[in-house]
Image (cartoon, rainbow, N blue to C red; front, top):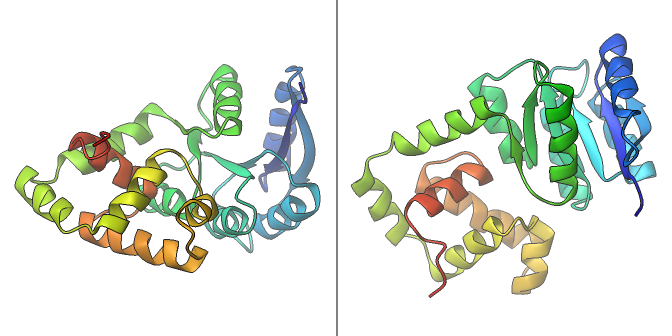
Length: 217
């Protein structure tokens, strides 16, 4: 089985090299590139096509949010795992909306980082417990009746998009499945987020799960 190919994007060289040294102990992980900022991470993603980009948030020039958005839009097969010291709501929800597959804090043990890399490489989500709590709290804070009314406002096509989203599909995969354009998928997602009052894909899925909308008919 081929090792998981990684790019490390962090402007703190010592931290990046320390992370590299720790990951080098894992036989199924290999770091193929290092980036000092978001723009370099995007360039390396284009040339190296890694399996996972381990992305910091606050970097000079292009930050991790914009870099994540560009990478996920241009190369949907490249997964992004955020590794940062920041868990502010503005960063968390912006990165999840940009398409990040996981969100981990730099205080996490190395074993958690390795596990998260393997998880997102498999196409699944990996979130730090504190990030999960933020998402759950946001969902739980909504009034049940308001949520139910908003769900009823979703169109049939929006429900189809939501269910495919919950399967972990990227925008392109949803577009191919429904035989529509990427732009149309993005329009549907914007409408879904607006109707549900959320800012990210993960929040939308959590609300749908809470209201049992993802059950098969």
